[in-house]
Image (cartoon, rainbow, N blue to C red; front, side, top):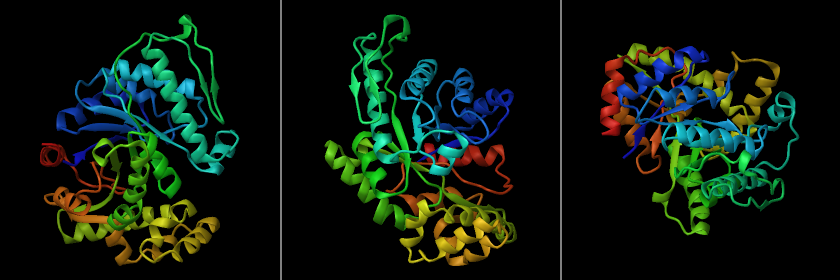
Length: 339
């Protein structure tokens, strides 16, 4: 069954407790935090303290500015605090942000993330065994020191690790050594079916696992309203956001899957000029139908299930405009999708 999650979008930590309680009460299966103007891990400590059932995780925490050890301490504490409900979502970000926003050296991202995940596994194993000898030697990370004073209290909660990815190498790596994947919101059923899932299967085969052992989640764009007029007005915000993502070269494969690869450099050029108003004009109605799910508040859950059945295990609606999802609507959707 496809699970329905939600995103903790507030940047005000004072609002987190109430929003987390509300999300759990409405019936969401998981709450994901973001690193967009705030730390992605800190709000989850508050959410964990004020909830009892809902799963929690960053979607995603940017890996490379933090050492594996620093990330491991935060993840370990959040797993203990939430009694095993924590999921560690990791992302690489892009070169410009890693170098110019975080001030960190950019190195081959997939190879480094593989090393990072394996280092985390070694740290978690060390702590689960009571802080016994830590020994990990990788291409980018070497860890060989863990004294009793610095080893946290052992617990038996497993910490699933998801990574964010779009292209072939990271998808295969995710399938091989991770527990799940955060697929990008700029996606389509065809891209998932013909590109993403096959590469995940290649990785799973290397590790001797099956698809049931792996979770694929994403935040699909939804265009929703009470009637045709509201739905039509909602299209502008989604068209704008799709044009923004499609302008990034990393995501060009999502366009190429549908034969629209030539649109990416045009969008990139407009973005470089700061022509944000001109970019949505390149997103046709046909593209909008492919990259977003359209429906009413009554049937949007069914529409999402129809589009992504057998492809996604979790969804979290991406609504880049002011929608009227009131409490009753969310409760009904959660009940329909989460059982």
